[in-house]
Length: 140
Image (cartoon, rainbow, N blue to C red):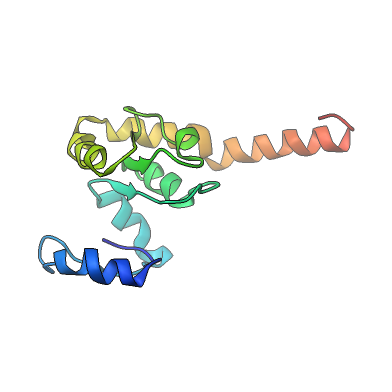
């Protein structure tokens, strides 16, 4: 497990006791140098946030590495994840556990292709230029 601890009390009470430093370990926040290898080699990215996240950059990063995402059906997640194609949208812990088990049924090359088609540099630059053009020309 990697990432920032948002709620130390929850981590200490619910996560830390389950770490065995063999099969389950917490490595903290990883920098850009290590992120691609970590995400690309991961079984899945768990994104079980309890708030209405407006985007979810780590979700797109994982999918760009071909790693499926299991995420709470909140905020922008339904817009980012194609349920049963690039990951699984879940409503509770039981569904998350099932999603983690099912990620092996997903084609990681499809996960990557979808992420690049929707969020790749060329696609995003073209979309920004289109929006800027509409603004400059007084359109909406």
